[in-house]
Length: 189
Image (cartoon, rainbow, N blue to C red; front, top):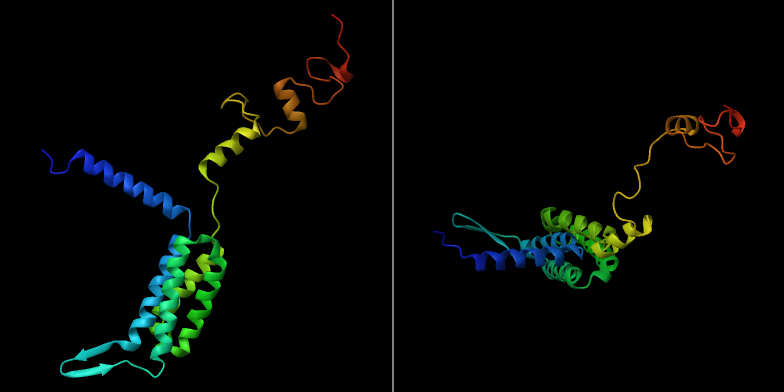
């Protein structure tokens, strides 16, 4: 007997598939990278490192600038998730904020935040929404005029001479074929 009930398993699977569909319609990974990039940029200037009884403060004079850059990157990442049409603006802004974070906040969060924000911004700018599955099916039907699968034979790569000789079909409009003889005249007898 299992501790897992079928209803709970079906609920989890349904939620997972809903999340997957939601994630596929927007630049999810770009937003996640930008959010991950903003966190170390905002955190490191305010962090204290404890070594035994010695406290090492990482605070810089640009702590407020680091906090603003980090918060803006997090906001841009979240806005990419919920407003996909601003992807180019958010991507370019994330790249610029990542570049500004190098001199302002401890080399852009010790290069960790800088690299994540830079890659996330590039992913946001380059993201393009795909065709929904319904439109892909309609586009496939339009190729053969709505004919069912397998109604047309597979195409072959015969050249003009090999194709006519191999299939017995005319190779031009005059009706010449191997069965008809030369120049389209029927041989008598």
